[in-house]
Length: 438
Image (cartoon, rainbow, N blue to C red; front, side, top):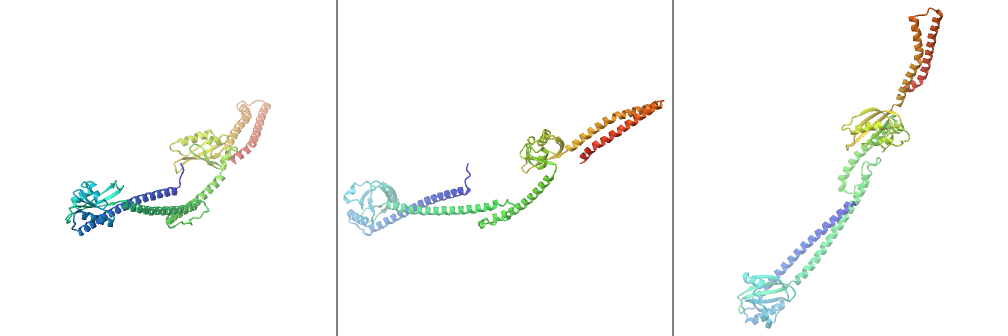
């Protein structure tokens, strides 16, 4: 899955939030504006009905229904509103209907606004007019006590088209304002995010150079005051990190120098027995064919089966302890092996091997054994002869002087041979002894 930019996601979330907020604001604003306009329209029409009722009362008394119809026609013409006077459900006058057609109108006693006006003095209702093909507002007011006119209900009818037009214009203006506000907010969010992203990119470039030993101990670039606490914390961390890094580099140099001067081979093994690191002495001990042993398994590098089995057993132990033993490598050298286990910070087991070449000592021991065997073999014959003649001379010395002299001569000769053999053995053993001591 592609790792998208955090700032791209943040910008998308911000734009979505702004769009949602704009939609909510527009909906609530337009809805409230529509309710306000409708309420104002209804209040205005109710006031218009009050004015018309007052104007009708001002011209009283009326000389019959004809005079009432004339007055209603006059008021409807001047006020640009349809006025209807209804008594007992019958339309007595209508400003938009000729007098001769009034008898054709339906009974209005079942109209909601008429029923409400008769019950409480005023009423209103909204319904669709099939004649005018538009939504209409009907406001009715109870009229009584006009001389010459029967008691009834005065009603005015006004189309909602004007309100709808005004509401549509208001919604458009409100939508435009909200859209501009959303665009400005989105542009501001985009600008701030881009600026912050650029500042953080420059900031991260400076921070990424802190691991270099020659880098400065402080961050010199501060994108803004908002980043100062973070910059101060990073500066403190960088100073400590640089100090620890220099200490580690010095310690590493010291260890490398010590390992390079060691004649003993040193290797670090992982849990599988692979060589993680080693010094040059180990490569020399294993032979030039091995070269760089890092990454190789113990057997592949030539450490031998004996050493591998012992180290594997130590690695499998629940609580490994330092051990020391002797082993023979694959190419034949004999070594003393010191194994020191340890664990990393993550709990992974590691082994430090120190291999001391004891091949010269083993060779000296072998030469010494051969020397002893050879010396024993060379000295046994003359020594046996001397012992035999000496025993004869002690136990039963011969009476013949010539025979005694011959036996003594043999003893002397054999002793001289022994002296020569000892001298030769000493000359033979001296270089090997010097080699063993060296």
